[in-house]
Length: 87
Image (cartoon, rainbow, N blue to C red; front, side):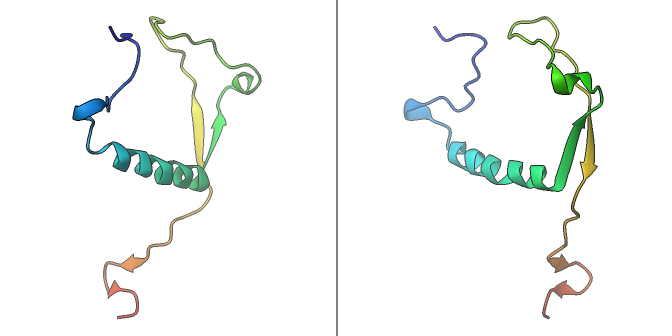
């Protein structure tokens, strides 16, 4: 029997999820883009020094408030008014 706290959304064997590889690649490309364009900082500076205790199976997870700052703006590659660039 599988551990009830394990997270296994794609399973395996004959019935493996067809979108597993796509989901893995999307995560590999999306997460670095988010980290590149945004800056995260703790609201409570104490969390930077000592992280809150958390264990699987706790009745309530600790709340860690974060501030998010935009570092870089995305430049649109396609203008919706004039169509694709260069036309």
